[in-house]
Image (cartoon, rainbow, N blue to C red; front, side, top):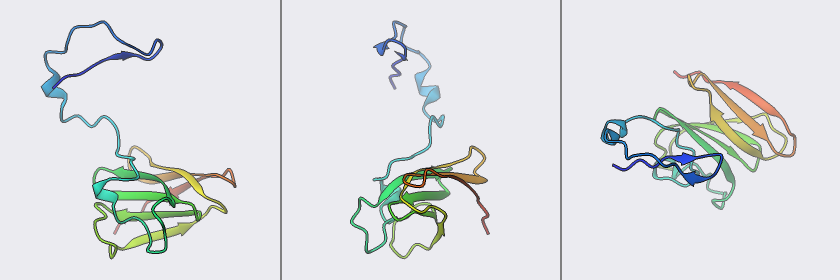
Length: 128
């Protein structure tokens, strides 16, 4: 494994030696998966959606998926979402499109941001 370090102030590759212990860092979770188009989220779209309706995705510990879409919906799924029959919980709290969704670090809440309504909504996650 190769780790490259960048200086965010200069946007340049930092002048440092290669980390000899890079393989020990391969299993560290660096960031959550928030890619709208991924294998584990391939069926988050309703049948009447064209694929561009989902604006934001976040995955919590490979257990839950939350999405925000153009219709103001925040949807919660079990991960992975590989079939269109995967049950979802859909919540309405925004009057316009949802621009972003994120789980809190402990996974107990979701924060969603609205576009047209400029609302920030905090949702409590309850799993059964």
